[in-house]
Amino acid sequence: MEAGGRASWMKYGPVVSLFVVLFAFWFRSPQNAILDDRLDTVLSSLLRAEGKVGVNNVARPKVAVGFGGCVDLIVDGVSLLNKIGLPPTDQPLHHDYIENEVQLAQSFAYFFAPGAAAERFMLNDTLFSELVEASRDLPGNRWAVGGNAPVMAGRMATEGCDLLLGGSFSPDFIDVLSQHITVAGNIVEEPDIHLILEYPSGASWGNYTSRRANRYIVHSDDHNPYLDSMAEFAKKLKDFDPDLLVVGGLQMMDNFPFQSGERDALLSRLADLLSSSSPQIGVHFEMASFVEESIMEDLLHYVIPYADSLGMNEQELPNLLSLLKGSNITVLSDPNPRVATVLDQMREVYRIINQRSKDASAESDTNGAKAKPLTRLHVHTLAFQAMIVTRGSQWKNTMSATAKASLTANRHVCGSNDIDPSKARLIMDDSFSVSRREGSQRIPLQETRPVSCWDEEDYEICVAPVLVCTEVYQTAGGGDNISAAGLVLQI
Image 1 (cartoon, rainbow, N blue to C red):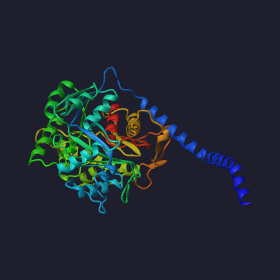
Image 2: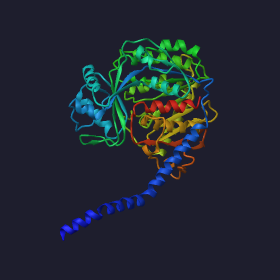
Image 3: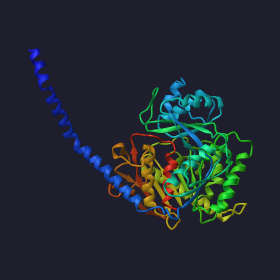
Image 4: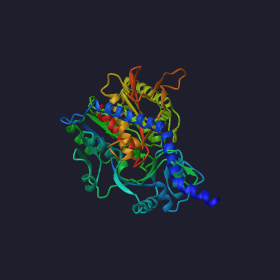
């Protein structure tokens, strides 16, 4: 009887298995088809919104971008730590800079579990060299042009702009840049290396599991903190006559061991450069991972007053807001904030900076420079893009720019210009509240019109969902690519 039963199963088993597979496919396919159709519709709608505005390739927009640059060595972070035998710590801790392996393990764990981006200066040259050497033969490693300024310049050149790039690079570095990028700076024999420890969502290190894909960056950079290309950049700036001036890379100064007064002097020269540029030229400052309170105070004094536009991520926004309100720096914030939370924070940053601008303009600085009002604020998060743009300002095409920023997020992280909906998902809610205030309007996500725009006070707000890449190629440089792409359509 038992043998007969086995024979029957062997005879009919394949038929039953096929039936089970077909039944499962039939049972699940409508829902999957709906999700696939939804992603396809959102993608085609975002592409249509992006395509409403083109870049003039005859008279290419001109953008000047500073400062600095490096070579990124990109590795799987967990694999590297395992290779050097660094055990997971049971004490995640924030450190302003890294001096030894214990601090590296504690700092990495602190940001790894929530999946928050971080960048730290490594005072220990020997440890940094050991990490680089261990990374060189790690499977899957790769080298890339790095640094905020070169990455933003590269994206803008790809999108149809001509660039003046302020930085000191090696001849090999310059050779791989776009022909539409002119370099202003010194020649160096060897570029600095920045080590990018990437990790995907769900990666494990000991008892820690990352909530989202991100990266932890360490460097021992002793060139870029000095902004040594600034003099040459300033010389060429006038003849270049840009439509937009972009400043980034200042996080290289964070916790760097300057001599007394050195950093103030450098930032004072930068303030002179920004404030002396033509009022018709927009100035954009790209924020980054700052943890030293004194440099944030310096930025509020020397840089932000002369910028029309600011770009930042979901960690940098509450960090800046906290300082503007007189509180301490916020080192770690929610890596997946709700739309309403981000919009409220953006409104406050916009309001406080513009009030400070009015107050500063009422009594000119000692050098006679006038503070500029903030007319553009772009926040890029994993789930969505959000922009505030002052009505009547020089920034145009906000809806299309928000769509382009959203699409660029997927293109960069997936490492492909062609977006594949099967490798993407929407994690933004089906509807969002415009504020955390009670009774605030809720806006539904419409697949055929995914970029939501509306007017408030003296500005327009636009929010677009991101088709979050599920097969991550690279997160490092994401913010720079996204910000740069958004700016291209607005100048």
